[in-house]
View 1 (tube, helix red, strand yellow):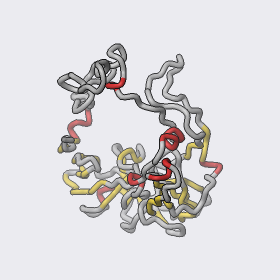
View 2 (cartoon, rainbow, N blue to C red; view 1 turned 45 degrees about the vertical axis):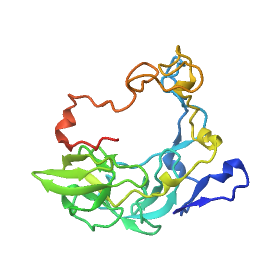
View 3 (cartoon, rainbow, N blue to C red; view 1 turned 90 degrees about the vertical axis):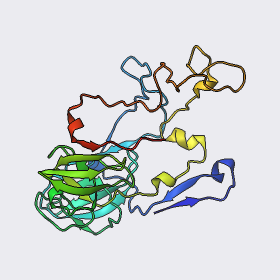
Length: 278
């Protein structure tokens, strides 16, 4: 998969790029999709609770199998498809008993390949889903469970992977994409390999319209507002924000403030925090 850039025939084309995907099917499997009405970031009163949302193309949501709980039944990859609800692509599986399910498409997964999910040791190859205790240290994994049987919750975005560092006293130690090192139960399931669509982060939209099609509305800089609207607002011409720290519109610190609860029960599983951004 690669990013294709066009000749600059218009200002919007000049810097725009699109993914040339190796997808094999355009229409989704009808039995595995459902419609969901967009709320445009508003609550039941119609008030905006999440800014910069709204509009966008109509979407059909795909039912993705995060649990992979059809154990020890071979499945064949019959299609690789686009999913508007996430950055990664999906693979459509046909199980030997006739059932169809969507899973995340791993990097290197191809049509016709067979994959399997099991609680026992199976072949260590891309797309197979098995407990962390059976996976060799140093391997890349994704779609990792936090609690056994609850389904994959971590490392699901395009191009992401975690590295299995070791197994100690019934706990698997993982290095996550953020740099955080965390322990989870060795009985948690994970998929071998890296999430596909690795060039997703290299796409440049090129114009505001493509951003609107994705369901995002414009974001106005605080410096461009009046003092009544934002702590950064006011002043003649271009001015610095004039504060010791950048603020949110509601006066809270905007950068570098931890948002995780200090008393969260799972804090004991975090061995090393992610590196701070400079």
